[in-house]
Amino acid sequence: MELSTRTAHELHNMLVKKEVSSREITEAVLGRIEQVEGQVSAYITVTADAALAAADAADESFAKGDAPGLLTGIPVALKDNLCTKGVKTTCASKILKNFVPPYNATAIDKLANMHAVPIGKSNLDEFAMGSSTENSIFYPTKNPWNLSCVPGGSSGGAAAAVAADEAIVALGSDTGGSIRQPASFCGVVGMKPTSGRVSRYGLIAFASSLDQIGPLTKDVTDCAMVLQSISGKDPMDSICADVPVPDYLAALKDDVKGLKIGVPKEFFVQGIDSDVSAAVWKAVELLKSLGAECGEHSMPVMEYTLPAYYILAPSEASSNLARHDGVRYGFRSAQATDVDSMFQKTREEGFGPEVKQRIMIGTYALSAGYYDAYYRKAQQVRTLVRQSFEEAYSKFDVLITPTTPTVAFGLGERSGNPLEMKLTDVCTIPASLSGIPAISITCGYKNNLPIGLQIMGKHFDEETLLRVAYTFEQNTSFHKNRPALGRE
Image 1 (tube, rainbow, N blue to C red):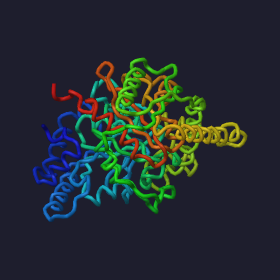
Image 2: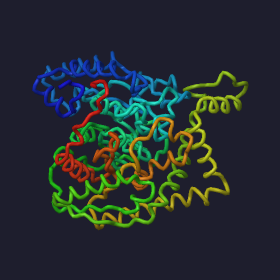
Image 3: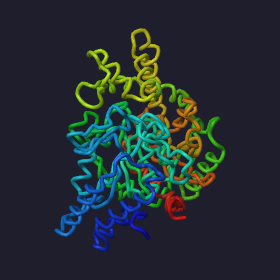
Image 4: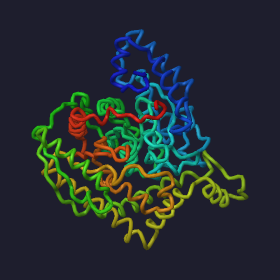
């Protein structure tokens, strides 16, 4: 089996036993990138020299007998909105096209400290605003399962890199579903941790109360390894919670006996593909046959989550993106004649259409006379959503839904229909608004495209999510399937 196709936990065991070196693994992944990247376009920047140097450092650490971290020597793709010292971090936007951060994100430092291998910066929708990775200033990323389809977004490059074996694992960010939705479309595992579980320091802000960093991996064990590696209190992030980080690998038990699983019926409304719905229900029945107690549940407030999100997230984006003005860093328009025109033309030329649209929506929602009508009401809905989840978790341990209403759609198919594009996130947004953890795993296929199963849990109870996901994985074979890309 090619090294690039293996999971992180398989490679970790091989490294510990000295059956393989990190340089060999890294060279295999770089070879795979050379083979298929021209078709997939998963990366904005491939850091081959830095990756090989990091691999050599990892091998040296193994040779000295240092205690290895879970990801020591493992090639990792990094979404290009995570600050990497000395490496361009563009957010797939013209306004940051040549921005080189002077510091690392905390999650990146955690990986660097254990000698993980950063293989490159992955493509995304500009400033993480989108659901297809078609909004990148550089180029769209393709879905490795079908190159005529989108990989999802905004972490589409990271998900595609893992699915295509151009990385062993990846870090993405999730604001309204930007890890889970591409995980679903690309047939990999993606988790949005509880808000506050992983430091956001060094993640270039979109909507600060919603943004979270999380793993994209080939299986649930790898997801637990990455989450273990990046979690924990960070004084540089004011909402990063000072709570113990459990042993996530110990939570991987093939056992759901006695667990109570709720299935909210509002997630199976009009617009959910019948094959997607059938695959999710089949997954629920499997978990029931393995000893879980399953029942339907009603959460009527869920129908208001999409409009509430598309007021709150743009409002925060309007505020956060004000810093990109051509003064301190990033792009500055050459057409400016004075300070006012510098602000105006820099932002006009530097931001793409989707980002401009969201800034305008957010600015409008926050403006005098409209704040109470829009922003305040959206915050009230957010409170009701959180209360609705609390009520559900008084009866159930986890909730199961589709990750996305459909499988991956064609490139360009929805780019002219903003509402249809935004409806792609209708199943993932509720967990984002309430701050709970959620994971997406593959539960079936339609037209050889993966179908995602979403499992949502209680705040800081990623262990139960991993346990349910692992049990499903151990009793099915979906996670073993890989795209045929380059191996036909």
